[in-house]
Each structure stands twice: as structure tokens, then as C-alpha cells.
Length: 140
Image (cartoon, rainbow, N blue to C red):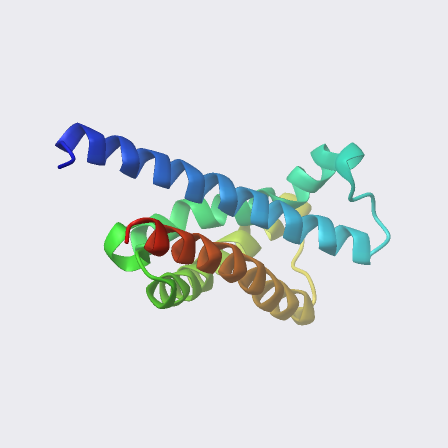
């Protein structure tokens, strides 16, 4: 039987893995986007990729906890994780888009936001879905 301290440590490790994976997923999204526009996107351009991803990482980390993206009950199974991720990404993409406009001094064409919403959601859902699948099988 796990003690409360053991469960807390496991929860903290799970949270750290989710946050770290989410940041990596958004960095991958930014690198793909930069690469598709002919901008530096490899490991040598990690700073530029991080700068591109920053508004969406901040938007995600600020909004998603309020919508359950890290709550064990909302993310303990793949279907729940995907539902929570999609809901959370709706808020995060709005926040990230506003931050990005603030950072660059203008809004982008509407198509940018559509592509950003869909592509980043697919990447985030893929990562988080696999994480939830792994966690659900690990706890059996």
C-alpha cells in the first residue's frame, strides 16, 4: 500500500513529465512551423525555436491547469486526456495568440491561427494520448 508521501511524489513526477512533454511538444510544433517557412529550426536554432514557441507555451501553462489538463481524474485514461487536452488547447491557443501578437506587434492572418490550432492540437494530443495510455497500462 502506498503512503500519502509516495502518492504525492508519484503525482509530482507525473506532473513534471506532463509539463516537460507539453513544452517539448510545443517546441516541436514551433520547429515544424519555422522549418515550413524556411527559418532555422534544428538543434542549432533552439533559442529561436524557443522564442517562437514561448507565447504558446506560456498560454498553455497559464490556462490549461485551470481547465484540468494536469488533474489526475481528468487525465487518467486516453479518452479523458484527449478531451481535456482539446478543451484546454482552445483556451491556450487564444492566450498564446494574443501573447504572440503582443510580442511581434501585430496579429497574423486568420489562416495562421487555424493551422496553429489544428497542428499544435494534433501534436499535443498525440503526446498526451500516448502518455495517458502508458500511465493507464502502468497502473494496471
